[in-house]
View 1 (tube, helix red, strand yellow):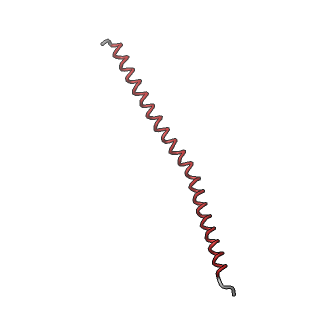
View 2 (cartoon, rainbow, N blue to C red):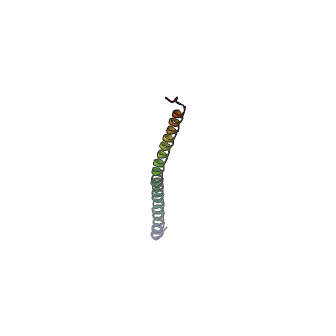
View 3 (cartoon, rainbow, N blue to C red):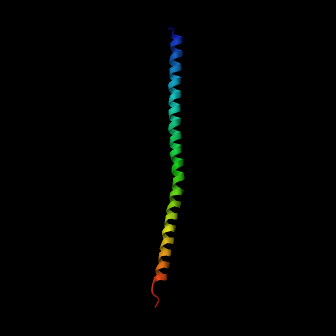
Length: 75
């Protein structure tokens, strides 16, 4: 094998490994971006869901108080 051919194969292998490394790095960055986006979406949804549950509980409490007041004997 001539020295030129050996250098070409070595260069091709180095380029292939470098490309695979870049692809792997891009996959990690893509995954991190997806996780950050999901977290940013979940935060307001969680807050809204918590507020909704609180509002439902308050409404049920008011309904029960009204029922109790309606059933209580009048003085």
